[in-house]
Each structure stands twice: as C-alpha cells, then as structure tokens.
Image (cartoon, rainbow, N blue to C red; front, top):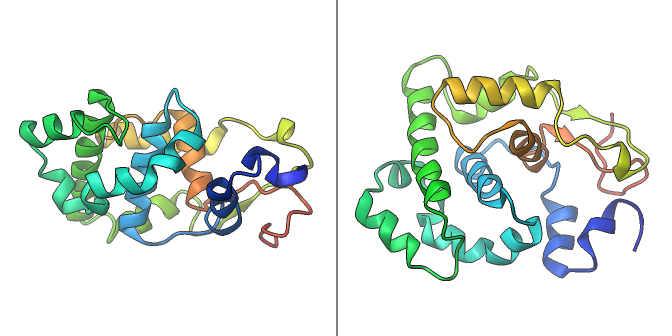
Length: 188
C-alpha cells in the first residue's frame, strides 16, 4: 500500500478512520472532546492501539459526555484503572476529567458559545489544507498547534502539548494533511 493510506497498513479500522474521519471537519462538541481525549490517550502509544481500543474507551468514558466526565470522582477513576480494555494510565484518565471541566469553563465563561467555536476560532472557522506529497513533509507540530496548545494549557487543559495538539487538529479536520492525490483530500 502506498500514498496517503500507507500508515493504515491495510488495517480495516485504520482504513475506516483514514477514509471517513481523519482530517474531516468536526463541529460536534462531544466528538471534539472525545478526539481530544483519545489523542491524549495516544501519548507514547500508537494510533493503532487507540483505534483498536476506541469502542471500549468510549464506553468506559460514558461516550465522552462532557458533563458526566467532568463529575468523575476518585472512585470512578479507580474503576477505570481496573478496566483492562482501556489505557490504564492515571495521569491520562485524570486529564480527561480535567479537560472536561476546562471545556465546561470555556462555554460557561461566555467567551465562546461552544467548544466547537473555541476550537475553530484559531483559524477563523477555516480548514487549513496542506499540500503534501509525502509523509516526510508532514510536521509533527507547527505554529498553529503551538498556539492552540499554549492557549489550552492556560485554560486548564492537560495532555495537550504541541504534538498531541497537532494530531488533534488533524483528527477533527482543522488541518487536512491528506497527501495530494488522496481521494479523501479536501479541495483547497
């Protein structure tokens, strides 16, 4: 397999993610939050690991309902730590709770009507379409991910360094890094 799908390694779950979700604009608060958490779960692991555990992770985290995750307490965190179907990393689990609270704070502050509005305001609602011929040209972070990461950290988010942030921005379609010639590439 070559071209843009090279990284999927013929894995049906990765192929489905590449073809239908990766770099596709997302404007749903719950899904934006889910992708933020999933990208945080990936730190130090492969995306393949996350994709193969995604259904179990979503179930364990109450389908990433922001209000529910924000109310997780020590008992719920311990319950998650005992679940062999998910990534059992205490710091990553606590980050999901902290990030849910940060999303709620962004919306309740009145500065933004939704998490969607917050995420997309960095590009004034426009998708950034990169024109890449090879994955060797794809950065792991850029000025935008540095800016978003810094702002999110200031607002109380965690597990959102510039590299994780870049992957998040790809995952929710703020950035389109499909290689030129890929049928999934946005026009632009």
